[in-house]
Image 1 (tube, helix red, strand yellow):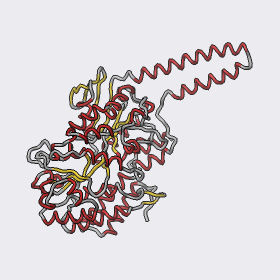
Image 2: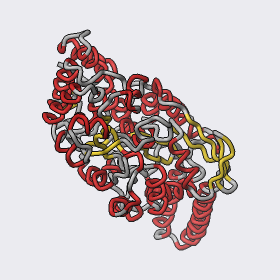
Image 3: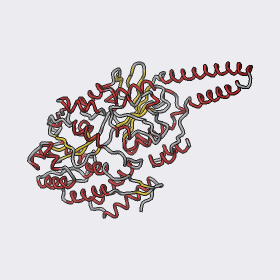
Image 4: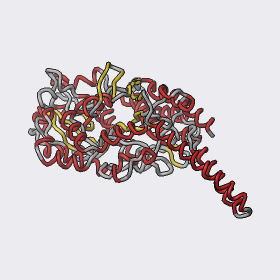
Length: 494
């Protein structure tokens, strides 16, 4: 079974193969559990023999005491080993968590770009960008060596995103938070969906996030005034309250000289509101709401009311400035901080020129989860980092107010929504936290699946050819189906 698991971690078929290879009975990396079980079995056998002979009972009692002493010593050694690590290895794909830890975890001292200190423990940041799946490939290769690695080389904690969280959660390379001593009560103030994403097939919670990534429509206030005659969030929301109204507003925006946004901005809003999973009974299913995205997007692209720019590209990014003539972006709170360039002169965000409303449908996008790696020799420190960064209300409020993030605490979001502490300068002083909190409560992950990342990427890539007139719809869908079957051989497509 372990051989299957290792093979899947190395495979680019990713999550689906992982779950099929592991099932519900994963082969865990080596731990002290087998030794403890052996001691218990020995004690049981000795107790049975004791009934047969008084003399043997005395001998066995001594043996049992010795076994108990040895077991206690083993447990003590394990506990000490968990706190003896001198190097804390953290694996991530960007600087986000590093900046959060640097700014908000008391006792963290930065040494240089890739090193820090927490007390006498050296912190080593292993940051590999996600481009071409490089982060996951690097993480996979290192986890495969975890059981045999020297203590200072072991991964202690690593970060995952929603799109591929199950790939790691459904293996024994991640520790259950309960095994770290983190209780349900510790996490009671978090949003349910943030825990569902990192709960394995056996019901064990294996990660925690400081973020609640409900998302909405982020609109250009000046554009809204020109197109709709108002930049009031409630009035703008009324103009994009469903997809029919959104399409009408997009066409009005085009008439006023604006492009609404890229088709790729709206995709996750549609894909988060599907009626079923990508793969059902082994068959690929294209949900009606995804076909709605294709049809709506094609209509707007043909009307020049939306474009087909790739997310994060230079053309897409032009909308951050007034000259870009973009009406809106779609995104969660992390989009405020990481994507709108509020610290750069000349941007709309720098001038407080964005507004926020829910948009046509509630949805979520992304988020970062902290996972403890099985085999860590810094269990107590990992536990404290997870509790501090994802449950400490003072720290979470600092993150929200300093970093314009939507944090994973119902209490903190309620506080932010109730006073001026939640007002954001890049939104012209608007407070978005009431809507963000309401959105987080509505998130439904019942259709989340292990195939999401691969299918979503392939679907968008194929649709682009159709939008740009390089393929018919049928041709684009055939390309999509072929890409999915190649990536996931166990899936069939009609």
